[in-house]
Image 1 (tube, rainbow, N blue to C red):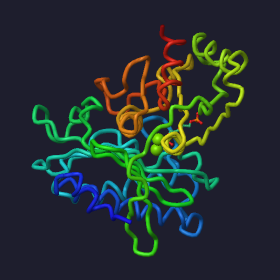
Image 2 (spheres, protein in one colour):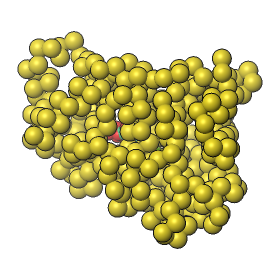
Image 3 (tube, rainbow, N blue to C red):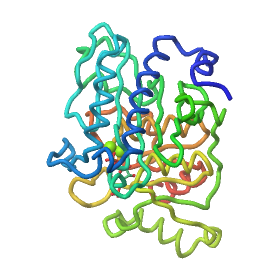
Image 4 (cartoon, rainbow, N blue to C red):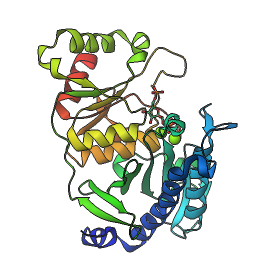
Length: 321
Ligand SMILES: O=P(O)(O)OC[C@H]1O[C@](O)(COP(=O)(O)O)[C@@H](O)[C@@H]1O
Ligand SMILES: [Mg+2]
Ligand SMILES: [Mg+2]
């Protein structure tokens, strides 16, 4: 089995970027260890604090955020970082070439029930037209990502990553602590049989979205073999889609604050869109490619549908045409 670094070298990834990826993964290995210790390490439960999204922070949200922040800000190549758990961009090294955004813990509501959780990360080149440590650094279209990935803390600890080429999967080998390549090229099967959505939000959806599901669930004969899956962790749902197809949806709805759904563009939608597209899937928002959207702020949300091309197309045709 090939180790991560030789694979990245074969993919002609620049050395400084390889070093940066290693640092992110060193932090994720530490997070994986803390997650596996659970109550033994006192990492379950909530803090009394809220993040900028108004969500109560879990202890592990804060621990994971601090681990990534501390390790990344020691990297000379990092000009700035942005995180779900930080209100604004945080300054690194003004001479750094890269900026890194991350969701330190995706699927936070699963932490206390030993459910699936992960860390999502994305790397861009630093912009030279705005201050090195400003929020504006991160207002770049998803197409400009030079690397995107997630680490999934499940039965195995998996790394799924693209540096612009194929989306590859690596498994953490606990015998020597390194990631080994276990899937050379992930491919989104063009299936129609699985969908992931929080159906409890049905009553808040716009009529066109309700109509899509009414058709799907009650009228579409071809769909009767289908199944609904909802991990309450986008990283887990997307991993299933990369493994066996299907779609993940988080539509906009009529509730205040949910006008653009729940998923954040910078550190959730864009990196997962890059992984899905580089595995021949599709990733859209309001009928457009997610990665073509110019962000307007760090924590902006976008309605998403991501996964098997045929299902994404079917949804967009019904809802937006
Ligand atoms: O509360 P809901 O509707 O089940 O939302 C679940 C969604 O929220 C998220 O947990 C949001 O991410 P965080 O856990 O990082 O805040 C997604 O991973 C998941 O798809
Ligand atoms: Mg998240
Ligand atoms: Mg999170």
